[in-house]
Image (tube, rainbow, N blue to C red; front, side):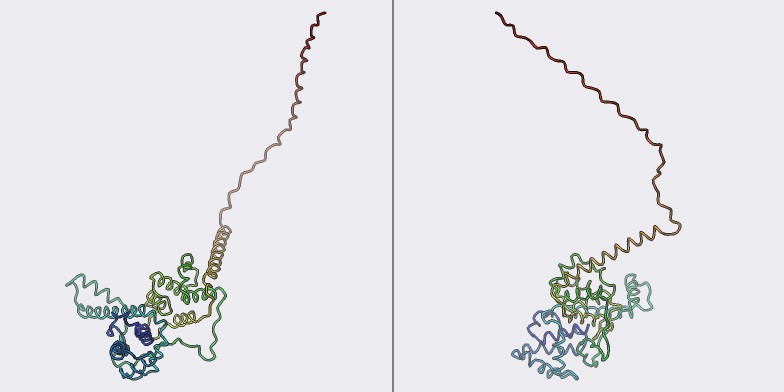
Length: 338
């Protein structure tokens, strides 16, 4: 991935001390010869010219490499194109991973050549060679005489080209993604309850899934790391070169990274997106139930069997019984003696 290589070079040009964080990355792991020469010159300049300032470093590296088309202005463009110099470790990991893939491709080609026309001498190698022959994706390797790649730059709007307006539902989704991309500290709070299916299928859902995956790995979230993760999810349809062949995604990510958005919009708008998705699903489920009930040939619903019954005769209530008469207790007259 040449853009990741450019990000490493650009971050080192802005702060050479960052090279201490990626000491494991040797120049031979760079795919492009221009980048190999630039990284070599940057590493050597730390010992040969340790006091050179960042402002003077592009002139120094351009003189040391003496590559056609690589001057101080070219190197300054690389430095400006680096998304975030503090994330150089993540960019170096991408470069290292791409280098491993190139190594695997070389081994694949070697096995193909060795086992071509041979069947059965080693069942394991035989099956491995057959599987590798079915592999269509290859990692391009730059030739030694290839010119220096242009610094990455998002494709600007052409003159007279009008931006396509999207519906309000998609605008809310774009605002959520823009806020998460620019303020990653909100990702964990939102991802706990916001599932990917609420986003429109395509780049929006892919970008949200990539943002969540990168954050779950405790890696820095920026335009380049998210773009790399999207590529990892679907390498066949999203081939990464100097400028990504599928333009919709990198341009879309650039737009998200530069969209003015209020901090915290992701939390608020995510609630609206979830509520809208739930209402749509309930309306769809209710429509399916109603449609199935009205289908031709559908059996009528069972009804209660209510039969007519004769009226209940009115029975007069029995008269109340009179209470028994209260008997008078006999009075006892006192005996008066004369």
